[in-house]
Amino acid sequence: MPEQNLHTPLQEIIEKLVSSTGSGTGLFLDLAELDFEEGAAVALLVDQIKQYLKRDGRLDLFQAPQVLAHNLYRVGLLTHPRLTLTQTRMDEAHAG
Image (cartoon, rainbow, N blue to C red; front, side, top):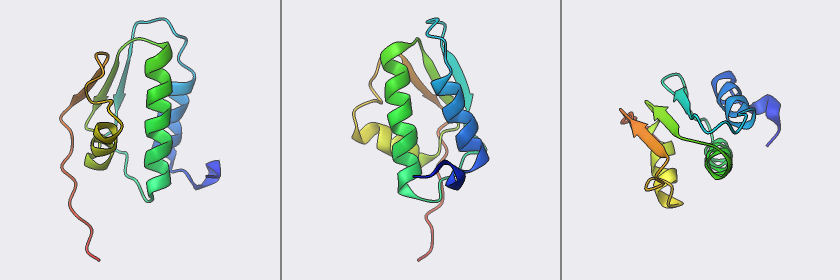
């Protein structure tokens, strides 16, 4: 997926995950502004979250979109001891 197709909030979140120093102190991400236009973007973020949890401390996701929470569940990350989701958004289904 070319980077220019990513929405700015997603780019910022991925940059924070990738640039984490591995200090073990953890990271808080406010995802209230994050929306996904396509499934590839969700998969990209799930992969970055997985990589972050392998090398760093805690990760707190605030107001994650429902589709992200569902995909984290599907890959078994919701039970990860260093991952916390707070106030997950219940997104409306798209008409179609």
